[in-house]
Length: 443
Image (tube, rainbow, N blue to C red; front, side):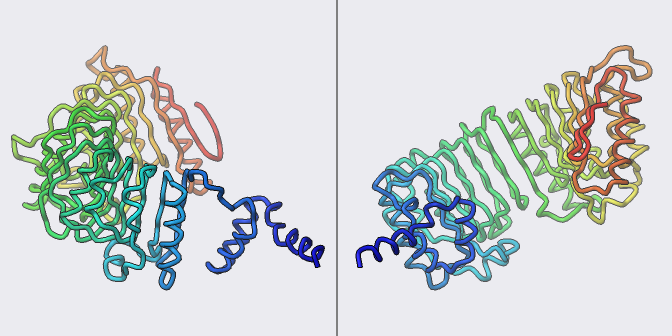
């Protein structure tokens, strides 16, 4: 009998000899309850009272398993976990509209999580919680909340004395009109506000500020020099022709951009490039910024060119310009904007004043060699090499780096390389480098 039990024990613990990659594949094919039973068989997965560094649960809509989920969370707490990830999002949701319609509060954050003294990072997606308990949350430094309804009381979270990083992602019903605190990193990602409202930011020590979503009446009370700013308003509709609404939005975004001019790295979206040209309020017109690295997410459409010019003209300390080329949408194929075409725009605005004399590097991501890209790059190279007609000296560009789009057919890839060779032929002393995932080349 004893030998049989020993043999059975050895067979049951055979999982310990399998590599982790194979174990993960096996477990992914099992039901949740079978996973729990199977994991008990492996000595490798048994814990022995030590502090746990990271514990993650990813379970889409755990209907019927709320008690098991909370039990696992309490287990992590008992092991003094440092980084806890709880993600109960249904990944069939496309956006927060779907989430607000079908969300159910299946799992709620257990009370003993809030004051866990070892907890440094917490991510809770589609998980219920009590916002007021985060005000005295032990050593919590990073908090990420997503796919849940937010109310104005969430501003209490910012009073947590140790919190340095806070993000809200794909939340709905947002009714927070004041963000203030000693936060180093802050992000609003694709949240849906309950009304067209104002939102003020008082973050004097912020280092990374990211906002994506709809336009608000932004009010920045205090924000010193910081490392990185990211603005994305692609949730708004595309521009067509100027009207009263576009002028209002252009004024709001130009004023907001002025409040963020201390960013060393600034990333902006096509919508912002289109909007800021509509600002006609003297108090909100774009002013010089301290940006050293400017990232323009652009479709290279003529309606974005004036916005590009405005930003280049107001970045006197710019050292690196990155053009992140996005896929074209239906409006990108229009040939002009308000009667102005791409050739006539750059011919009219071909001046040294638009290019900072400090600019050393131009980076193009998703380069395809199309006319719009080549036209703009020709202008930048001509201005940057300091050899434009009528001017013997000017800004000196050191290099242009072209990262070829990875998903192009071979014939299109050849066109991209032909375009790069053309740029090299006119570059003078400017070095043109091509980075191709299929063909590594330096011209």
